[in-house]
Amino acid sequence: MTNTKIPADHPRAKSLQVREKLVEHFREGIVAASGLIAHGRGEAFDYLLGERTTRPALEAIDAAAAMLLTAENPVISVNGNTAALVAGEIVKLAETTNAGIEVNLFYRSLEREVGIKELLEKAGATQVLGVGENATARIPELNSERRRVDPRGILAADVVMVPLEDGDRTEALVKMGKKVIAVDLNPLSRTAQKATITIVDNIVRATPKLVAISRKLKKQTTQECDEILRRFDNSKNLADSMTLIRKNLTRRAEKKSHPKREDQQNKV
Ligand code: PTJ
Image (cartoon, rainbow, N blue to C red; front, top):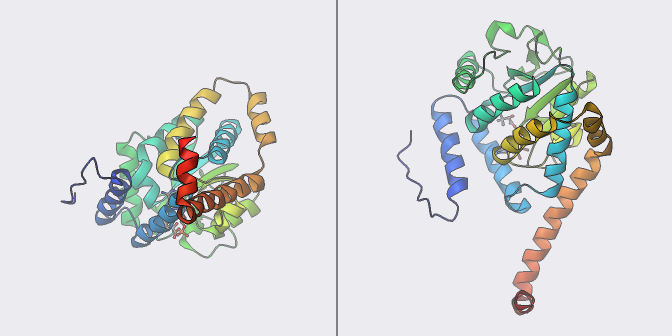
């Protein structure tokens, strides 16, 4: 625990609490040092998106739920940031969609793998794949430590969910014929561009929504899930997120350039 007390009425309390959680888990060896930097990049995009789950993100969440529920062998890949921020929600999502949970790290060390496994188990996970000697399989054409996977998990999966991913593995998994669901606040990242479905949202907001929608969709027919997937277009969805960022910026810029005009509009 850190000694920093964040006042509940601080205008950016939520965001500061998320930072604190990451720093705490960094000190405990769960989050990689680069994970803190990666979060900073995510925050910048979150700011531009308005720090809310947007309409395109909700559409991608619907499609992701449909894809997980109709998969034969879905697996959720967990890294340091994901475990620190949403371990409990990941366990609920895995239960709802019958998905496996596998630890897969860019900055791999046995201590971190075991720490993340224990965190997931504390949150209720009964089986955590990919730890230590269990990651005997290799993803072809990938040189990072992310290539080491569990033959019962990511190697055998038809759908892999990869929150906060690097582009190389997403591309390699797609080349292996797998469908990839990414959660990435940066719609321009290689991961976002290469994934089958990209949820452009903060994992802190997106994961609980994904659990809720999966629970709801689970009561529907497979045809309904198929229909959601048929309607979803990842390229268009990413373009919609980029357009939202542009519109947010334009609105903010106009407010600065024409404050009086804004005031008049607000009075109407
Ligand atoms: O735990 P490890 O060893 O596997 O390492 C994890 C990190 C995150 C360090 C590693 O995967 C990495 O270096 O990732 P990148 O290439 O920096 O990409 C992270 C992406 O996640 C960036 O595009 C960020 O915008 C995005 N991101 C950061 N925080 C969030 C996020 N997306 C959604 N929610 C967030 N909270």
